[in-house]
Every structure is written in structure tokens, then in C-alpha cells.
Length: 157
Image (cartoon, rainbow, N blue to C red; front, top):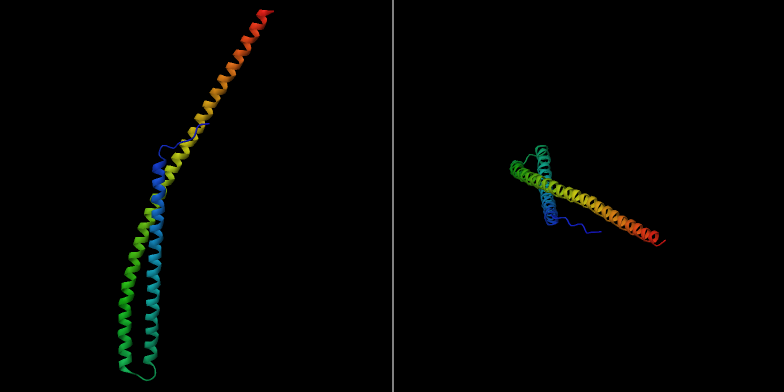
């Protein structure tokens, strides 16, 4: 039986490499988004602590300086939270672009794998036809030899 050779195997190999690269990019973008979200959660928790402290500062003995420092800390934290929210948004956009790229590359790879599978099925059909033709030729040859041998035996008798 002949060996199957896919003519566009090099293209399929490139598509596989591109898919692996896109998976790595997606993974890196996901890790970056996770880090940014973790930072945002930390900042929001810290802001919440300042808000809780503000309510405790307003009850009991009033210390204007502590209240003002707490208010400034809350304002600063609001700025940090806004900045970090923007970073999270940008990381989400990067992740979405990486996801789209990965999806596209996976579709291209699957297309080439389907083409390879169709080419292999065609190869099998051609091979089956070729083997059938060889069997027919062999059968005809054997039958012809048998008939000529029978004809010679009858001629001798």
C-alpha cells in the first residue's frame, strides 16, 4: 500500500504553531486580567475600610484632623479605584482580542484538518480502486493461463 502524503502538511503545521502561540497569548492576557482584577478588589476593600473608619470617626469623640485625613484617603482611593477600573477594562479588551484571534486561528486549523481528512479519504478510495484493478488483472491473468493450459492438454489428447 502506498503512503499517504498531504500536500499542504506544512501549512497545517504552521496553523498548529499559530494556534499554540495564540493560546499562549490568550493565557497571558487572562493572567494579566486576573492580576488587574485582584488589584482592583484590593483597592476597593481598602476604600471600604476607610469608609467604615469614617463612620466610626464621626461617632464618639470628633477629631477634625483624623476625619479630614480619612476623607482625603477616601478621595485618593476613589482615584486609585477609577484608574484601576480603567486598567481592568483595557485588560478585558486585550483578552477579547486574544480570544477572537484564537477563535480565528482554531477555525483555520480545523479547516485544514478537514481538508487533510478529505484528502486522506480520497487517497483510500483511490488505493482501493487501484488494488481492485490489480486483483482483476491478476485474476484475468490466472484465468487466461489456466485456459491456455487446458487448451494445450486437449490438443495433446
